[in-house]
Image 1 (tube, rainbow, N blue to C red):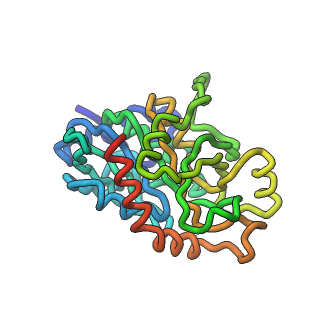
Image 2: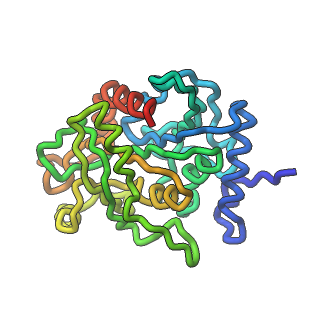
Amino acid sequence: MTTTHAPDALDDPATDPFLVAQEAAEHIAAASGVDRHDLALVLGSGWGAAADLLGETVAEIPSHEIPGFSRPTVAGHGSTTRSIRIERPDGQVRHALVLGSRTHLYEGRGVRRVVHGVRTAAATGAEAVVLTNGCGGLHPSWKAGTPVLIRDHLNLTATSPLEGATFVDLSDVYSARLRDLARTVDATLADGVYAQFPGPHYETPAEVRMAGVLGADLVGMSTTLEAIAARHCGLDVLGISLVTNLAAGISATPLSHDEVIEAGRAAGPRISALLASIARLV
């Protein structure tokens, strides 16, 4: 009989996080009636409406009922996990796991909790994951509401989801194949390097300039740790950022979380349709 771990079990170093992910996958299979999910999506700020456009919702599960998950604490983030039946353009049917409940590093719940969603996705059988976020842009030409493909990242959190002597090649962490596929839906999609800061405070103008010198085009507080964990699990990764504001020092106005939510709301219908169209091809 499987032992079900509470969310805080991931805080115990003696607990195998992959065992908790397997228990979460078993819970999702039992609750949804879907034995295997082919694709996973993590919906960040502004991207939540895409779940309604992907296809038929087979099951909607309160995330905090799934082993290892807990209720979200950030405004603009969902609290459910959905199993969705997707019909591809070629008629093939696939199932997507939509993770609406994301844990951020700044919540203080530990790195294991941050990446538990992608590890669970891999345990359900997923072969690819789409990671989305709302972020600050370093290029004035990228106005609020601009979607940008992530081609590489800078992990500036000073931590990793990998434990012990675990070495993973990250030279192709974001799949070029999936970026090319995304551009078959929208050929105008730009790409860039995403830098994750630990948060929860926004970056200073000096930090944004530093990130730019290091090669960043986008700055935010999520995604890179999930991408590392996803590659460790063998998942192909497609990263898409929504520029919700110009970064500090580039923006003429002070930054606020309300601005992020409003920009996501305004761009929601357009980017949700874009994401749904891409996901049907992945």
